[in-house]
Length: 165
Image 1 (cartoon, rainbow, N blue to C red):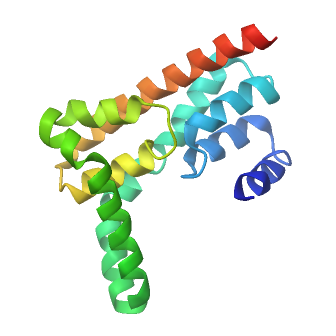
Image 2: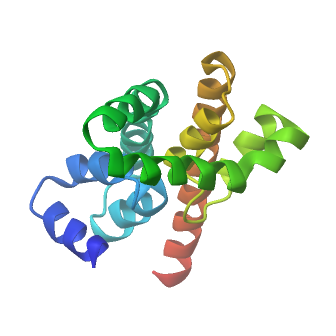
């Protein structure tokens, strides 16, 4: 339902802009924006990869540095939401904590490189916040993971498109 609404809205704006916006959203991220932009909107793969990586990178810094401030604000003004925010962080910690303890920042990159729902930039940033990773470690690892998963999704899309088309 949410994805249907997003795609309905996305079809009303230029495809290049829709690719950026869909890549920045936690529901779709680049894992869905790349195949849609190439297979449905017929954009060039190099352009799609560039736009999707730009869009996917947009929320990294604000989420990483803004989450603590958001939680403090929520604590003061919307106490009910703190429990929800804490659950988000706990879920990210459960999903990724053991990988990080074993593999460090390479685990964060590997976690992101699996193109499944819930393994994207948003979850990786929340996991980094939950694990209290220093930004100098977390942000480069998240960018590497993002670029890697983007390349994997692009390759799968191109391979699948050539088989189907």
